[in-house]
Amino acid sequence: MLSPRRSESCPGLVTHILDALARGTVDRGPHLRVFEARIAGLVQGRRRFAPDAHATSSGLEAMAALLSAMRIPAGSRIVVPAYGCGGLVPFMRSLGYRVTTVDVGEDHPFPTPALLDRACTPDVRCVVVSHLFGRAADVPALATVAHARGALLIEDGGYALGSRFAAEPAGSLADGATFRFDAGGPVHAFGGGIAIALEPEAARRLPLVTDVPPPSTGEVLSGILAEATADAARADTLRRLLLPILGSEPVRPLVEWMDGAMRLHPPDGPVRGMSNLQARLGLAAMDDLPRRLERRQSVTLGFLAALGLQGTGLAADAPDRWVPSDIVVRVPPGRDGSLLARHLRQAGIVADHGPALADDAGALAGEERPGARAWLRRAVRLPGPAIQDAAEADRVCAALQAFQGRVAI
Image (cartoon, rainbow, N blue to C red; front, side, top):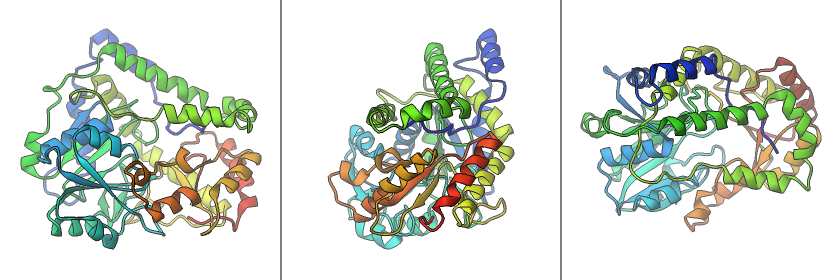
C-alpha cells in the first residue's frame, strides 16, 4: 500500500534547483560547510565545543567513514541491534566486518544493558545502537557497558535529529554518530548522511568534503526528481484516489515487493560526499525545523489521543524528547499485528506491519532473537507524522477512535 507522505515538502524546491544550476553549485559550493556546522551545533549538547560533522552521500557511507575514522579495522566484530537494522548487516559484512546482533527489550525496541553485556564477547570492537521511529535509546547506559568491555559505541541516529535523552541531544551521547537526510526525517535533503565524531583524534581522520567526490549533477537531479515524484504520489488527495486499488488484497503483495526493492542498498566503492544542492535543501529544512517538529508532535499526539494513549516525551521541553519519524503502536502480547493492520486498512487508514515497518537483522545474521521477533509480530505503523492536510489528520483521528483499547505504545 502506498504509504502517506513521510516528509514535509521543501519550500522553494524548484527555485533552489534552478539557482544552483545557474550558479554551477549543484555538486560543490558554499552550503556544505554551513550545513555541517549547523548539524554539529544542533547535537553539541553540554560539550564546550561543537563536534566535527562531515556530510556524505548516504547514511551508510557516513557509517563507513566513521568506522574508518574511529580505526575499527576490517575483520573486527561489531554488534548491531536485532530489530530495525537489517541494512547494517550486509553493509558491514561488505566492509569486511564480522557482525553479531543483540536482542531488544520487551518494552522498547532497543537493547538493554544486560542484553548488550551478554552480547559483548572479548573480540567485539564496536557497538552500534540505532534510534528508531524518532525515539532515542538509552545510549549512556549502553555506552557504559560497551566501554567496560573495551568497545566503542556509535549512535545510528537515523531520523532522530532533534530528539533528546536525559536532556542531551541525540548524536552527542556516544563516541560518534550518524544521521540520514532522505525521506522520513524532519530534515529532508533528498538523500545524504552525516558522520559526527565526538573524539578529536577521530574527528581529524574524517574525510573532508573537499577530499571526497560528490555525486554528479545528473545523479543529484535524478535523485531529487525521483523523491519529489514519490512525494507527489503520496500526497493526501492522490493517495485517497489510489488507496482502494493499492490496498486491495490481490495488488498488495506487488506493492509490498516494490517497497522492499526500493530500500537502501550498501554503497559501492569509496565514500562520496553530499552535493552542495542537497546541503542547501537541508539548510532550508533546518530553517523551518521548529515548525516541522511541532507539527509532527502535534499530529502524533492527536493520533495517540484518539486511541486513548498518552505520548510521553512529545512535549517540546521533555528531557526525553521524541521527534517522531514514524507513529508506531503495538498489539497486546501473543497477538499478531497483521490482523490490526488489515482492520485499519479496511477503515481507510494506511498501516504497515512486519518487514514493511522494520528489518529483522537477527534473521539476516543467522541468529534467533525473540525480542526482535516479538516486535516484528506486534508493531504496526500508523500514517504520519508528516501529514500536512488538517482535514486528513482529523479524518484519521476520527477513524482511529474505533480502535481504542486494542493497542499500546
